[in-house]
Image (cartoon, rainbow, N blue to C red; front, side):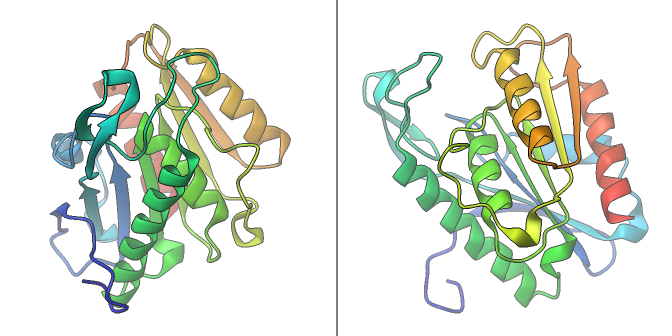
Length: 224
């Protein structure tokens, strides 16, 4: 439970050797869970003196329309699998609110918001966009992987994060979320003045070691 009585999402956590002074909250994709990106941590090359805690929440299981209503871990329902990506925005925002409670728990554990990076893959990335760009306190950065900015037309942008650094990574051969979606997110953020790095990789819907290393370099630079 959080301080205000809200049930926190269950999470996988990887602690640094020293007391954590920074955190990365990393959201998985549809049908996965918090263990999905746990194995990448040793390959990121994060400097030990940054004392970064990694938090990998598990999404709740809900019926997913595009999968014939079968229940699976998901941050929100996807209603149509088309270029418009019709989704349940209320569920997406509820998921963002649930992650806000995790940010507040990090604050309670001694990590300032300005030392917290929000990361997400696929569905998790869509939640990360919404959360990081609307969060009322300054964050350290946003990582959006193989995803799309689902709420780009409705998000309530925060002045505290008006120039939030962002890393967008995408596979060039992604059949699930076309690379054009990543490019569109990059263009949208760049036009609004956000400092964005955009990286593409010879991948389908996933990450490889080159991308993981690039993410690690970016995290070290943001928190160093």
